[in-house]
Length: 380
Figure 1 (tube, rainbow, N blue to C red):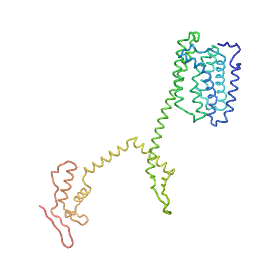
Figure 2 (figure 1 turned 45 degrees about the vertical axis):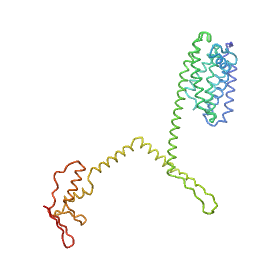
Figure 3 (figure 1 turned 180 degrees about the vertical axis):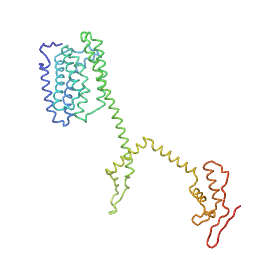
Figure 4 (figure 1 turned 90 degrees about the vertical axis):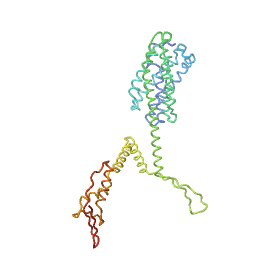
């Protein structure tokens, strides 16, 4: 355990000043290699998380080798003190350089509030000779390093690794350490509940971040499945519209080998038309319009079966509009009104389920001139 002089304040600390200069140089030397603002905003975070994770390894080894006995870890020393000052330098440098070079990436919660609060937490730990406790908790910077290095080098990204390390350190280990600080406070912090209270206050933020991580996994998984279904549908439609051409053999030489002509690549208009057709089909299925269309078609078919034939209706109307002799002339052919009335009555009785009790009165005679003579028919 080390004792600090009374004049060893934050900005008077040699370790803090040295760390601030080193972090500033690292940022300006590394910035030209990262073109985007997002990548530049993670340079200091990557450096700090790497240093703090390495600094926590000796204390983490003591903790895990003693099967989670918090009283068996090393006490505060010069290297734990320097590590805490380095972390304070990172917090301040990230705010200052962020305002100068990546202001849009400095979030209110994870930037101003988080960094300001942690500056005082680390200072409190140093003043209480608990720098070794803070360095042990710095093992929770491992998931931060995984996320930061993936931001600088996207090909190293591993969502599973980040989620696993985050859950093991900032959820499981966080709860374990918080309980240890409460249960063994008499031997670890001289009876103070400060570390346990701080751990309890920070845990909801870690839980909130982890829930956001899980929601992101679920959302990306659903989007991936949706894109795959759309791509499969587009491929099927394009395959139907542009079937591959059969094998063709050139006729210039009998010894020339046959070749297969590739299917033509769809133009931009074709792709847009396919996408529009697929979207319309999805909306059609979404509002169940296809089922309604089938029901409407079935109703039309049943209605046509019930109603009489169009020709019978026309003929029936023709009888009502007969000529003065009581006959009907349609295209110069004689039509028997008695048989026509019987056919219409039978059709109506079949379609409507009614029994025709009265027959239509037939005409007394039907006379249609044909050539120079006439054809007559009389009924009683």
